[in-house]
Amino acid sequence: MAVLLGYLPDIVPVAPSPGLTLASVLSLGAFTTYNWLCQYDDADFFGTYPVELTAVFRAKLYGFLVLAVPAGLFYLALGAAVFGLGSLVVGAAVYLPVSLYVFGVTAYVAGLRPTELLFDTPVFAAFTAAMMAVLLPLVVLAIAYPLDPTLVAGLAVGVSLVAGGVGFALYRRAGPRWTGRARSGALDG
Image (cartoon, rainbow, N blue to C red; front, side):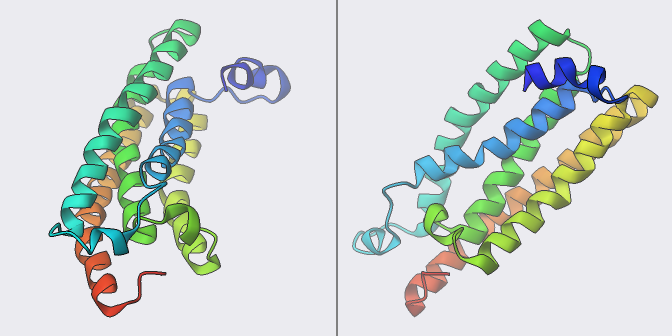
């Protein structure tokens, strides 16, 4: 990504904000952390123990925060070493809320079977639409960043905070949603 950002202005007349671009890509990549956390889970298995799926999703959130956030901030720090601190501060402010959005959407849409359910076309379409609703505006803002850095930074942080709130709300709804599906025998989507 750093190589692409470094050479992009030589190819096209656009120099996107390294911070916003890296934060957007790293946030989307945080999906793989959630996928990894759920790799061996089975909601039916959790049904055999006196634990609510809400508690399981809460544990997934904690695990996600412990693994994904430091990793993303590490790569943003590397980006700061390559591109300078400038827009990377904005990227750091955008990364956590957008990662929370990715977590919440994934937990709500795919439950504890993200790998399996995202091969289902309607589920994947919903996931993709939800990702594009936030990431596309952030990419446009990354391209517009050189025009008015203060305004664009404020808009990007605003978009990410709204997205983070939506992600948190979806995470809060994931446990009850998947508990209801488990009780009705409809865990497969």
